[in-house]
Amino acid sequence: MLYSFEMQMMGVILLTAMAAGGISLWLKRRKERKDLENIASKDDSENSP
Image 1 (cartoon, rainbow, N blue to C red):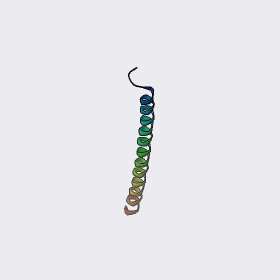
Image 2: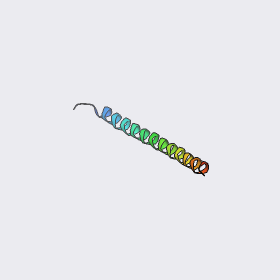
Image 3: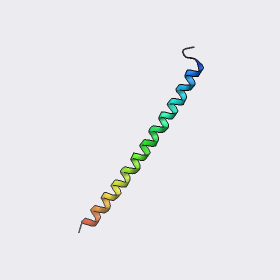
Image 4: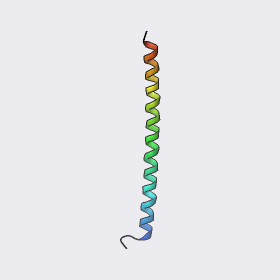
């Protein structure tokens, strides 16, 4: 066997944790970007005659 069972399980857990963290950060950034775009579009519509 290439690695022991414990090392394989640790890799699976770390990979899952890193994937979950990455998705969480991506969702937060996406939400912030949408909020900023909404604020900018509201400002544009208020300033235009």
